[in-house]
Each structure stands twice: as structure tokens, then as C-alpha cells.
Length: 237
Image (tube, rainbow, N blue to C red; front, side, top):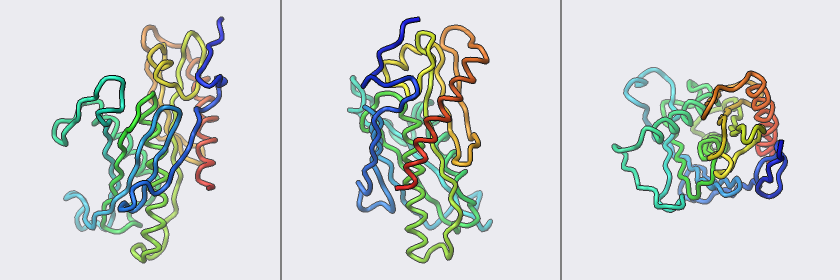
């Protein structure tokens, strides 16, 4: 088996270079730019003092997400999507982000308000959905702290950190945090969303040519646990 030469000479178990830049959008309740290698995502949280119609009068809030790729984020111009004309891929990803972020807090403890997390991909080099979840969770955690500091929550609810990472099998090797070059060649492609206490929110695993063995899935899961453990260290900053 030939060992793949990875970007930045990473090992199979290593994340891409990762940075967080806080308060990129000063008008947002909380915002950050997450950079994982060549993938850069702007995550911003806004608050609306209302809930969707199905929650009116039920004494709980709502957390939702919107995701989009900006036209210059890919090698060829990505067509801008209007709110009513989003692709199936975009809708699937933003629903995944929303489901994941709602696991972070008891919605009955945030009041009848909506926290909206916007995730805009500035540069796409693989793993945009997982970077959006990881960055969106960090921004949401800070937004909740700021709401409490403003006296709008009464008490800060318990926050369960969430992170997400990709993994895949490329040329018979299991690799963590695929960039686009690796992802485009992967025989198995997976995305993992995890809570800081070691539970899973969602696992998406797909074979791209032939069925994969249980051993492949177990190794991808092991890599995801390593990657998420490193991502959760961001919550200590």
C-alpha cells in the first residue's frame, strides 16, 4: 500500500491547520471566521425576539441555521442561491447544522426567541459542512453567554459543546479531515457530529464505488473521535 502524501505533510490522524478569528462581524451577537486549511467559513449569530408559528405560546425558543457558498468560494464561480431557490444540497446541509446546534442547549431555557446562525463559505476546500457546525457551535456558545450578560436569559443555561469533522478512505487508507483533493478521490466519505461528552448527533457515511467493511467504519469513527477531541479544546480559549 502506497502512503498518500497529504497536504502540509499531515499524518492520517491530523487536522488541517486551524484558526479562529472572533468578532469578524461587529453587528452580530457573536461571530467568527473558522479556517480549516483552505476552507474558510464565516459564522454569525443573530437574535429575533419571536419564534416560528409552531412554537408560539409553548414557552421555548428555537435555534436554526442558514448555510451558503459565496460565488468566489470555488474554482469556478458558484451560482448565488436565493432564499427560495436553494439547492437540495444547501437545504440538507443547513438542516444538519440546525439539528446539531439545537442539541447544545435546553430550548426551554432561552426564552421565546430565535437564535439564527448564518454560515457563509468564503473559501471551499472540503469539509464545509463540518467546519460550519464547529464554527457555528462556538459562535452560538458565545452568543448565549452574551445574551445572559445582557440580562435576557435570567440564568445562563448549561451549554453542551458540539463539533464535527470529516473522514474518508482514500486509496485504501483512512484519513481524517479531508481536503477537496482527497475528498474527490475518496472511496468512502463520512461526516461525524459529536458532543463534548462523547455522544454522536449524526453520522453520514457513504460508499462511492463499492460497499465498505465494518472495519473501515470503525477506523473512520476512531479518527473522528481524535479530531473532535482536538476541536473541543477550542472551547477552552
